[in-house]
Amino acid sequence: TLLRNSFLFASFSVYADWSKLLVPGGLGPFWTGAVCANLAWLTIWPLDVVKSQMQSGNYRGSQFGRLLADVVRSGNLFRGVVPGLLRSTIANGCAMTAYAKTKSALEAQFGASRESIY
Image (cartoon, rainbow, N blue to C red; front, side, top):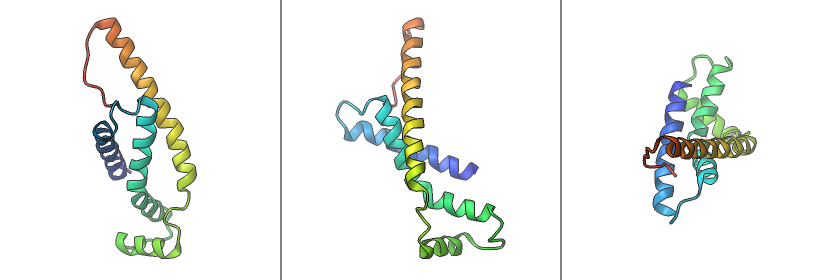
């Protein structure tokens, strides 16, 4: 889980940086959070599926690569991705909006400013 979350956060950060370069004027906080988080989830989804399979206990002693190949062959690689992305869209879009509003309120209160991720 730690490895998965590390890749997830790193991917999100890369996509957030790319969004600033690719979209003139930016996406706005909700869409930055939603789009970048969904792209990050799609990036690490295969890792998460295999991790979940390994944690289930049904595949003791299986190697990561072999288990990934089995999941791809069975057609279950992206099973559950739609509900996961719907949840991610709402949760991360709202979280980024809350972050932006909190940041603005603190900057107004204390007069400090830092470069934004959106």
